[in-house]
Each structure stands twice: as C-alpha cells, then as structure tokens.
Length: 548
Ligand code: TEU
Image (cartoon, rainbow, N blue to C red):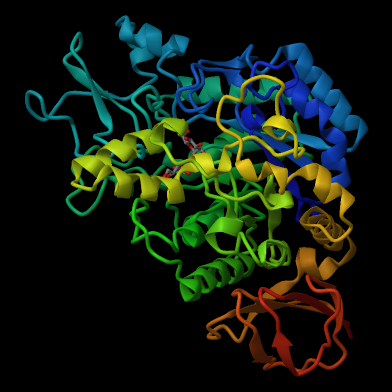
C-alpha cells in the first residue's frame, strides 16, 4: 500500500464505542465498527494508547507498554481486532508514547526507590538553590516542569503532567527498551506507528530560558535525528510495509525535511501544528482571538511547498483528540454546517500528504456544549481553568476560554445514533455526550446520500483514483484573496484545482489561471458552472480536474 494514496482514521478508543456498558469505549467496540470504517474507505486505523495506564492523561501516561488496560479489553480483544481489520484490508497504527512514562511505570517506581539504574532512565537534577527547580521550564499542562523528590533532594523533569516523568533518551538502555516495545507490537502484526511528541526526546541543555518557556532547549534537540534513525534501524525499518508518523511539537520545517525525508530513514511523515495555532496569540492558547485566515493559508502553503521541494512527506489534518472540532473552529455549526464541513474536508484532502480523519469529523461533529467546569475531564483544561483565575480572570471568563479551546471538545463520545447517549454506550458515559447527537449522528449520515460522511468517502476515493492528488506538486492560487482558499496540483499531464470559499458570504471569484478544459469532479453544492469568473456560494468548495 502506497501511503501517499492512503487515508488514516484516528480512533480515541475511550470515546468511540462502548461494547460492555461500563461507559468507556473499548477495543471490542472498535471491532464492532470496522465495517463503518471500511465503508468510509480508510486504509489505516490509528488507535490512541490503550495500554495499562492510570489514565491521568487518558492513556498518554503508560504504566506498561506490553499489556492492555483492562478498561479497554484484553490481548485477545486486540488480536481479534487485528484479525478482523485485516479481513477488511484495514491496517492498525499504534500510538507509542516514549517521551515519558506514567509515574506508576515499574521503571519510575524503581527509580523512586533509589535504584540507580532506573534513576538513570529518567531525568533527575539538583535544584538551583533550596526550593528552586533546576530550570524555569514550563510544563505543557501548566506550572513548572520539575517535581521535587525530598528523599533525593532532587527534581525530576516532566514536560507534561507531574505523573508523566520524561525518559532519558541519552541512556542507551532506555533506547533499547523502546526498540523492544516497538518490535513486540510489530510481532502482533501492527503496520503503523504514531510516535507521541517524539521531537522532544533529545534535551539540549538544562538551563533557564530567559526568552521563553524552555521549549527551545528540548525541541528538535541535538541528537534527535540520530535517535530516530537508530529506532528505525532497530525496529520498524526492518519491515518496509510499516508506516510511521511523528508528532512534532513546535518543530521547524528544516527538521521535518529530515524527519520525513524520503531518503532519511527516520519516519514516513510528520504532524506539525503551526496551522492550528492561528487562533492563538503567538504560542498562547488560552485566549480568545478570531482565526487569522491569511496566516492559515501561508503556513499550510509554506509547509506544503517546502516539504515537496525537499522530498519530504506531511500528514495533513484539522482534527485530533487534542484539538477542538474544526467545523466549530473554522466553519459554521448552524446554517452552513454541512457546506462548511465539506469545504474544510476539501481543503485538507486535496493537499499533498496523507490525510488523517479523526472520529466524528466525517459526520461533522461540533464542539461540546458543556456549561460547567465539572463537565470537563481533561487534565490540561482543569489545570488552566485554575491558572487563568490565578492570573486574575473571572471564573466565567476562564470557563469561556476553556469551552473554546478544551481538548475535551474532541473527546466527547462518537455520535452513532440519535438515541440515548448517541448510541455510544448503554451505561453512563465517562464524559458527556453532545446534545446535538439527536441531529448529528452516523446513522443519519449513512442514510443521506448527500451527507458529510459520503463526501469524505468521495474524497478518500479520489486520492486513490487521481495520481495528481497523491503525487502532484502544489501551487497556491490567488493566495492574497481574503476569503478564498485555492490551489493547483500538477502531475505529469494532470491538473487539479481546489477552490474553496472559506466564509459564509458569497464571493465573486476570478480564477487567475486559465480555467479552460477543467471539469468539476466534486463539490458541495448540487451543481456549479465552471468559468473564469464564478459566484462562489457560502462555503462553496469545488474540485476541478483537467487532463492534458
Ligand atoms: O500531545 C502533545 C502536545 O503537546 C499537544 O498537542 C498538547 O495537547 C497541547 O500542546 C496542549 O495545549 C500529545 C498527545 O497527543 C496528547 O494527548 C498528550 O496529552 C501529550 O502528547 C502527552 O503525552
């Protein structure tokens, strides 16, 4: 399978489908829904972590990489899922969290007990002075990134939650442990790996950051490429069928040329997030600002072209379990819900890269309508609710910001039906189901031939049918236009134009390129005339194709 023609469907098992009524989604639930994913046309399923974990960060705090958390099922359930997926030609991609473990991991427990071998699996340092942590680095989930251990009079580093101590990749034993984990899952027939925040594993130096929060000292660090090449060589690189994607936090494009270069023997592709910070203030997420359309286009185009020039490969996406729902973010959840969801899908799926669809995106799921802080579950949201108030915001202003930016927006249960709990569980869901499940659900999407689901299905198919989508170069078209997102893809004698009105107001658009010979192969309105000057309707999307 050529991953450039493939689409990956991301599943957050906890919120996908609960098969046993305990309110938590599970692996059997995923197996039950394989036909649905097959129907959509996805080639891979990326499952977020289901390993043994105290679930402080919903499984991104791994206690045991070799076993399945009983809340998600058993190894037999996993093997059954793998078999059933295989029968349908769907491959599994697992999520490997190797920047840190859970503090409950045996290694960390031994470290805390004073075992020097295991202390060296983690990053322990002396404070600068009594009561002063080694550096001023800020944890991604708020607060200082070092935790004091009185028994040692030392601190350990945790770039994420205090329960997620960072592993010491400079220790070759740690690297060997990690390789072993990957090989274990390869033996189970896994054909893809997603590596969580993998560009944070090589720390440059432990110094105060006078300019920022510390990220420049641990992001894309000095030995990162060496470590990735080694991991590749010692594990997944031994099977040419395996695809890999690195989650790259605050990365640079220059590093991504190497992470995902076709000849660099590191990873198949990368996730970067710069295009999803266009409704932040710089790096500050916990503010309310309108999204910057010009910036969004510039970032996406720069990455598209830069990566193509360097023969490197992107993962392309709007949504995942850390992001608010895209239709709420850049689209319209009311009058033009359907049109805008399809338009946003068009922008991503005609780009150069492997598209990722996050559960529920294909049915146009929106941000959740929680009104009380008690409804939120995510550690990051709960921490920042407090931090924002400590900074002087009122509780209601803090809540408003959480409502817009919370990762829980992407984590509410998949809406299967209009029935109770959206058909996710027969029990009490671990997190509230969006009330709009009555209106927005997979059942009604499957019945409607004009649905968002069927539009995604078409886009996924187009990538397989048209080489230009998979392999073509990309050129921005009319980039300065304040409401239109347009680009051309070219490959041999094929051309494809994606033209999208990104807003809810009609716009008259004149194509700066010769439009003769182009025919519409997909769009989100029943019909459209293709001509040099067009009236684009609210959120209208057009995919135009010309051969020769
Ligand atoms: O996320 C990494 C990460 O830094 C973010 O996407 C993070 O959620 C965001 O910066 C917060 O504003 C990965 C996982 O996808 C996420 O779910 C985990 O919580 C995190 O790593 C730690 O393992």
